[in-house]
Length: 114
Length: 393
Image (cartoon, rainbow over all chains, first blue to last red; front, side):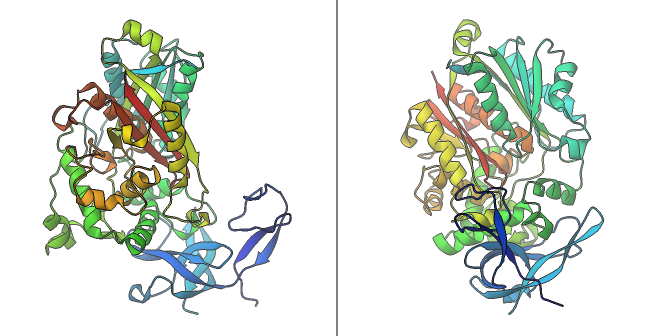
């Protein structure tokens, strides 16, 4: 099985890479994009340890963060011990089930030690 | 364009938990505004609400409120723009009058949130976030506030004590506001430095504590606006002109912003409103800002241009933002103490501005006859922001 890696959307006119997807480029308003693979490792920009997760998350505490991948950033869950989390730390993306929404299991990227 | 005045304001009974229906709650605020304006001759009603379709099983509130209050032949509609619904509805009301389409418009905001359990309310607010890039991960608005606060702490030396100082100031103001949901004196010991503080004020979204966040509140607020010409004819109150309005946008996903601590939409909306009002920042006597989280009180004041970036917390330490300070902020208690029924907040901010500018704010009255006032109503997590400037004529 091939490991899933984070994807960005590169504008075919100006080359700007976006995440998430937009219908028109944030720089030049062009409409055509190609999916590009992004590095699966990045650094932690900010985070929170949420003691009141929303419905569909079966945990009493959830770590959420923003990860800088160079050209774009990702928002996601962190699979770490709370005491191990540090600003600027290196993290790697893994594909996991992240939440149940309307009774359906939804997957996304979870960030952990490389 | 015609000049527009606010001639009536009202908020119904004290905010908190409302036992009746959403429409009854909004009707009470609307009738207070009618009484204050001494007229019910309105041409249109815009109702501001975010979540009634989801948590109260009711939509098309504009039609419902006109029917309930027999405001016929007035026409109306519901305006949904997240937590900026109130400011947006007022802005649309302004446009309707300034353009000459209507002479007199009522704007009523309301949200009945306490019917739903906490996690459901938090999730309904989170539906404003980006569906694929944020929502699926369990992003909540307290989480976004916390991630903003962590960058602020790291970059500018803001501390939990600073946030607690803002909460204490807002609770102090709320104690003097008969409409405020939270009327409770708090102290630094009680919420941060004593042993009991950990129980009184637990961490909700690290580094944010319970008292760094607004409560879940039922509430409504209403204003009546008309052309200045008509206001001069019929109003016996001090005339309050809607001097400036502005609206700004930003990316939906917070992580796409170049600097997540810079609230670009607040800057854009403020610049427009100041330019329209032909006023400078230093002309403003006080402000109501959208402190759903106390960190936003700092970030908005800086992004609006009232303080340098990373410096607003120093003004808080000096007491400058207290009612008797150099630049009072949230004399009403803000979202922290008055409460934050999302659709009502932007309208309630304007009620407070009007009361203060008329000199009718009672115990929380800002001294020296304030003349120009500013309100920022912050929608999404800062991707849709409305600023209003009011001036006493």
